[in-house]
Image 1 (tube, rainbow, N blue to C red):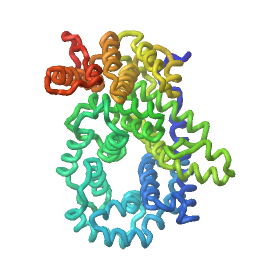
Image 2 (image 1 turned 60 degrees about the vertical axis):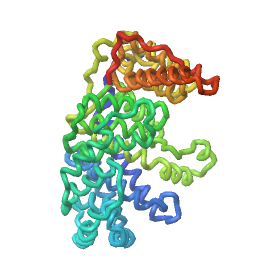
Image 3 (image 1 turned 90 degrees about the vertical axis):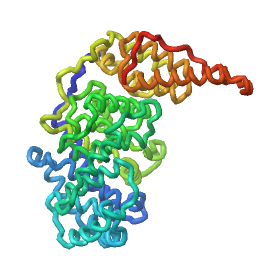
Image 4 (image 1 turned 45 degrees about the vertical axis):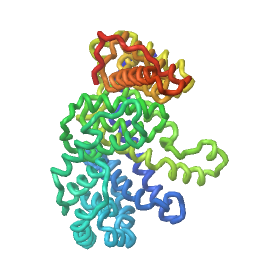
Length: 445
């Protein structure tokens, strides 16, 4: 069995994923052109914008990877007319509050050297009003707007608006380790994407990098346990885009994604139906793959492009478990995970790896266990897992701190209900009664 925490692939493996994504993108644009009523044709503007984002994400590799530069040139020539068509121009004109959203592909192409003065003039006029009348936006969407203003050669970015949005986003406050939704985690990953300019800029945030990484491990555990390739890819880009040293659990997840894409030629998206494609013709199957998996393949290109830079490459140096974590902690937590009915493939792969990786991944394993228990409202299970965490020296981190706080709230609720003489008897109350945690232990986020 392999025991090393290190990656065992090269920069060429990463750049190969980038070239694959660019080739996939060209076929996606062909599908949009061929049928306006196709699944991709119905979301053409979104797909065009994301294709431009792919070009922007991989642009730093041009100087060192000729195959990437060649593929980008071919893709850009196909993208320009789609990014600046009459429908896009009309949308910018008629909906100034969302002018940057409609013009995203144009802005990115403009930044990459494919300028269009007439379109810029139209966008400038619309954006003057758009800054004042735009719709209410969530923090990560405000960060996206300030990012577009910053990279557009004619933009007028506001540093104050950017810093306020970062502070209000998942980069400025802790993630809910037990209840964060898929949308919450996407907001987290997108905040990183835009605030760091896809890894080109140093993040300006009041939060410590180690706290952001702790949230990223929680998010990675959620994505792996949901067997969601798309979300897993986006969480992983947090490491190279924020210039964090690769965590062993992140390397483990990245290796699994690369192997899966190499074997299939794509990463399955949420809508991909393996049973459905079994009865399709080759052409139908390829169209289904592009329609349901294009986003997953694209963001894999974002990730591998960011990770391919010399200062972000998956590091061959091992990162040891935190001081205080006991040897064998990973095996203890894996045993608890494998005792559950839900047994995703990643757990089996982790179990096959050596103790060194398992111990290093213990905080991620713990977050998965605690989230599962919280989602099931199984407080007895939550307490069991927390006791195991204490024995393994895993008292710090957002997941155990929030789980311990949940148990204390449950205890207060139980005592309040039991002490209310006017309350009608409820057979479920006994399930809330949870003994207090050891008072001599400190749980820290």
